[in-house]
Length: 146
Image 1: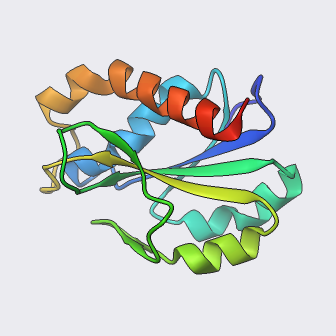
Image 2: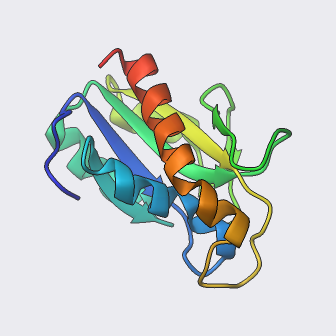
């Protein structure tokens, strides 16, 4: 985590670095930490609830790999789902939203394909990291009005 120029929004990077493309949010948020405060939660987002509440942000964005219909590397707001299942952890959105209330909580998914055991992203996804980071940043700013 680094101090940022945007204290109204915090990004929570989720993912398992030993499951290939599941680590995409970690890599994307490494770029975004120059513009946002980022907590790297990996597979334990619940461990950061207290730290987030102490910061009192207006909005929190959980960023994670996801599998959904759409192009590889697409960024999508998943916040309307009741439960979001990822390949490395289960996040109960209702519980997290309740614990972080009154903070606005959003879940952003990055569409992936490969979650085999590997400590590297697929070559195709590696090439898209800057583009994906730009898409995540634009979406966060649009939603948070920062």
